[in-house]
Image (cartoon, rainbow over all chains, first blue to last red; front, side, top):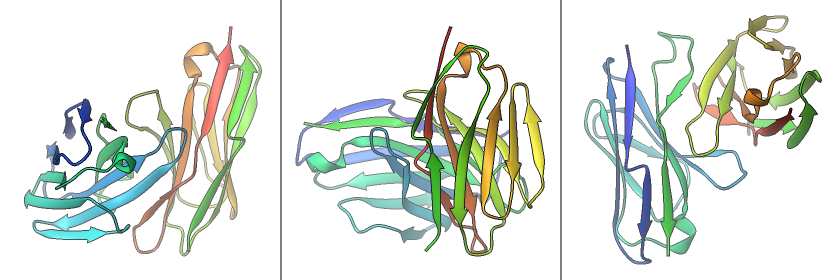
Length: 114
Length: 109
């Protein structure tokens, strides 16, 4: 069965520090991968998606970047965090077209920038 | 631009008091409508996929229905453990997913 791992679960970082969040998927090949951000009490905002190794599409201009160095690994990064980067970050994968389950989400990372 | 709107934003129910959550959508070439449950501090958990108007799916006390403009999540005789945020999302012809803002459901014993 397919599983998605996302870490860390919580992170407190000072303004101006770098960021690296990692997400890996097991049990599937060539998944579509996504990074979402969820502000408190709000819906999910798509940040990046990837349909293959090295292929990254950005939905929203921001202080963040994403990379996909391996088929089932997706990384969210920042060189210098801003206070506004605080939020709940979710990684997701999808093989829409091969299954009916839409997107499967990781457990999330709560990022607090102080 | 695709839009998905959920109402109400929050809903308080007494245990056993049935109700419905609404998800209205404007999506270019709808290919699927999803419902998720999200507990505090966790990622959304998949509940249902609906593909076409008139389709219905059930799971325990939940039933999801779909029309050409909206979807409903009916909760029959809810229990406190049904308390969560319920998210709907629509996938368009380009396979892009748009989420609604969610409905926060609180069921009191």
